[in-house]
Length: 57
Image (cartoon, one colour):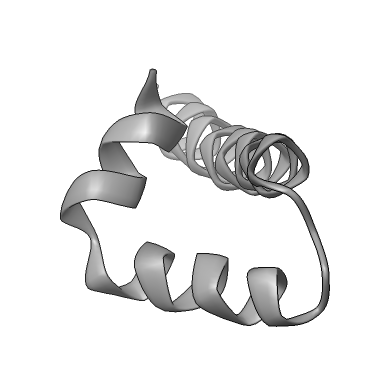
C-alpha cells in the first residue's frame, strides 16, 4: 500500500519509476523494488529510535 501511495503522491518516487521504466522494468518489478527500499528505510529508522530509547534509560 505504501509503495502504491508513494507512486501516486511522491514526485521523487515517480521520477524513480520513470527511470526504472526506461531501464525496461515492468510496473510489478518497480513496485517490488520500492517495497525493498521502503523496508530498508523503515529498518534504519526503527534501529535509530531503539538506540535513542536505550540511551534515554
